[in-house]
Every structure is written in structure tokens, then in C-alpha cells.
Length: 90
Image 1: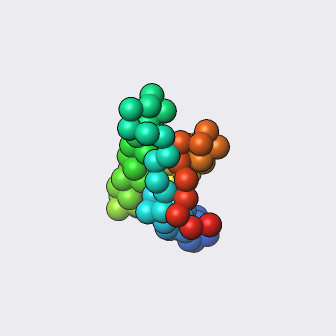
Image 2 (image 1 turned 90 degrees about the vertical axis):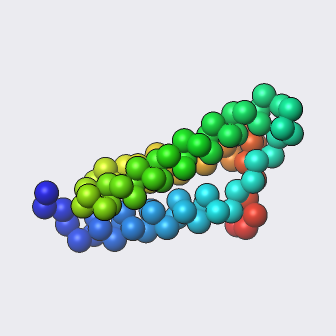
């Protein structure tokens, strides 16, 4: 698959952004709360999309890698907006 160089840079940049985000979030709701379950589900989805993106990069499929990293970040963004995650740094 012929993919432009800027796609490569973007895929690797989004990989780093998602990895950094995953490393700097905490779950906010108490473990007894239903929202804690929601947060864990969102976190699992973000981590799964990260792993998928890494797999796609290893397979030289930068388009799907970029998509996976973007979807993973969307779950983190949703969790932050919902208030089930907080960040350790800005």
C-alpha cells in the first residue's frame, strides 16, 4: 500500500499522544460506583485501540493505525468530558 510520508509522521505522532494520555489519566469515581465500571470500560477500549494501532503500524498499515489511535483518544476524551477520568498533567 503506497502511503505518503506525512501519514507516517501523523500515525507515529498520534501513537505518542495516545500513549502519553493513557499514562496520565486516573479513574475518578469510587470503585463502588457504576461510573467506575464505565471508566474501566472506556479505559479498556482506549488501551485496546492503542494495541490495535501498534499492530497496524507493525503491519505497515498506517491508515488503520491512525484510525485506531484516533478512536482510542476519543474514548479518553469522552471519559474526561463525562468526568470519569482526570489528568495528572495538562
